[in-house]
Image (cartoon, rainbow, N blue to C red; front, side, top):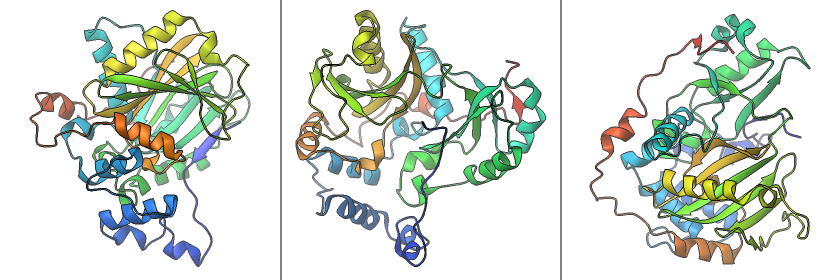
Length: 336
């Protein structure tokens, strides 16, 4: 049961001084930071010049890829705009639902002025960060505006995605806060599905039943794959993914492949709620390439990922730049 995720926490002093989230690590050259983070996670050095493993190729992206096509991929509002318009142009409008954005701004004090227009249930998150959110349900508990103001003040600035991890696209994202609709009636939606796409072809789905961290993996034909991890959902009990109609799964696969066809590798994250697909976000720095992964999966995913030619011309540069245009701020976007 997860109602908030406020960002990483530091260990206590004196370890905090030399911890990657501490005051010293961020001043090291980015390449050295990435090598040290990789060594810390994998207990070995990685090959970032001629990478073969998936985890190594992610480090290559972080160190080298500064293409305009990547620039908007850490901006949550840009995700919504791009996905809506792309689905519409492709005749797939209606395949995905979108959480409605109620407010965009940098100061929660402004949001508080419009509190009477907000629905009871909503979620606060930064537009330019990862792993941070606060779920609100004023029908069960009064909103603690002082806490939210302090949280918003902290979230509105730069964080470890930029100054520690070196995730370039997070620095390009518009630094603002958003309040949006909560999906479903429970604490979380029924399930979360992550669609892994390589060079325009969906390779696998990762499913997480919400309210727990257990997972299941399916190939593009919806066959259950071995997850090789102690977090795997037990076999033999149908998952939410297997229970939804196959035509919905087909639409999910087609939409994911179409939405990130221009990327060498990206992930489309969706929610399932009452057999309806909801868009969540597009991911291009999946856990910084430092998450738990078996050696076999690291090799398999690495073979699937064909790195791009960074010097190749991009005819869509203007479209990517337009996605990071000015935003209306400081007022409720609609009356719920």
